[in-house]
Length: 426
Image 1 (tube, rainbow, N blue to C red):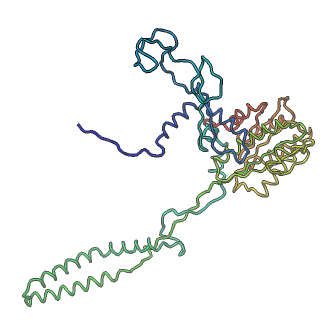
Image 2 (cartoon, rainbow, N blue to C red; image 1 turned 45 degrees about the vertical axis):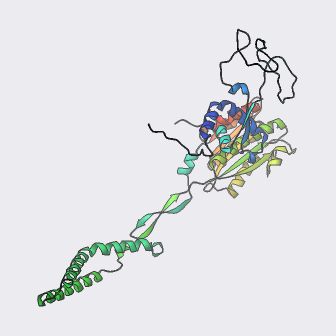
Image 3 (cartoon, rainbow, N blue to C red; image 1 turned 90 degrees about the vertical axis):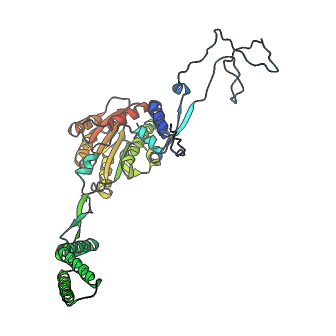
């Protein structure tokens, strides 16, 4: 019988498989905790890991044990307090010598909740499970205007600056060996015959005559080999450069928010959480993501994140001013050839009556031709306003690049986001 003893040390990731099983088993609880965790962070600092707490009752395993009551007889060894025949009460209930701060009790039991940490990748995986960026493949494969030249083997024709010296010399050497192979074989045979004659004296006149003939043949073969050119045109090898489309790895997100008098602090907080999710989603797909904050009432201006969400400036509502500013910034700083452009607009839907048609025209003529996706969320519990009805016309004509949803309470944020970016089944 053979025994195999594995003495290899466990790696630092020895529990990785068990961890993945745990995350899969309690996915529902972790996703709820992750959705709650993003509410406490800023837009550009929301992609770190998080501490997740799961109630102990949800991770307890079913076990068989003795409950209270029933007949149970055990025999224990005696000590200084008990002797044979003494009866003691069965252990059970709460209390004991724990370190907690609660009051003692003669019934019940309690345990701490289970808390563990998930890293950044796990955090993002739970947030964006089964989601995708609309038109991402379309942009990368069809609308790419940037190219770069990459090496793609060698060719026999090209310009002098693309000449590959090493490959050319290898080709020339191979050609000379191939063309002179028969002469070199004969040369080796003649040299071997010459050595054999010289190693077996005496050398008779006939052998001397043969040696002279061998020398003449050797010199003739050497001359034939030397006639082969060291480098020929057919030996030249050039680097073959081809144009390869380069999808842009950069994205810009335009955050447009209505800050008129009807937008309360709670409404702005809901918008912030939605923008956080969108920023994270873009960051997961692109190496570089920029955020442009545009706030508007009767006029629009570009601001930083702090002013975007917490400035007290307010006024009437003209949504077209924000869309015009978005168009101007895009044309000045973000070319569609180099940037993947996304627009997210949050509003309570209220707008000046004569302005909603202008908004529809701006979106269809100026923004949708250059953006990857335009998402509009209406944050209100009131009936739909005229802006919503105008946007419904856009949705009917551009269902792939325009989307709109309604958010009434904070609990609607994540479901609405998933609806806007759900993976389409082809």
